[in-house]
Image (cartoon, rainbow, N blue to C red; front, side, top):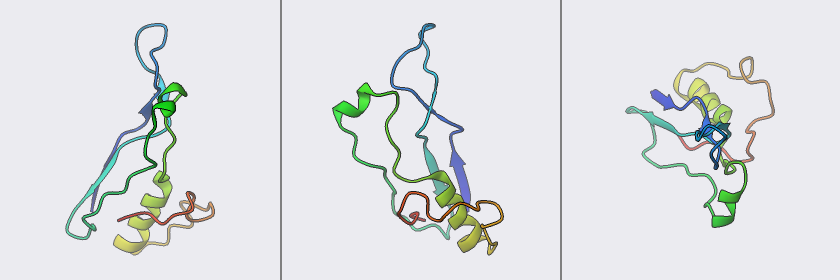
Amino acid sequence: VICLFTEFGRRNYENGSFGTDHGGPFTMMLAGGAVNGSAGNGPTLQNSDLTGEFPNYGIDFRDIHREVLNDHLGVNPTPVFPEAQPLNGNAAVI
């Protein structure tokens, strides 16, 4: 399993220097023979979502990393991610 993801998302608006600051949501892609070929999407964005600081995300990155550790590497993820699982209330999609 290969996991590619951005370090951070971006805010919805430009800052004072015409750039965008770090935001919450991010992009992640998993590839490999053991990966289910489906796409996991967050909530459907509405126009009103673009007026906030950044859109909400629907799948917590820790849920996906937990699933990779547990299902693909056979390692107990609890010592790495001791939080209640899954964080977003839904199972990850890999």
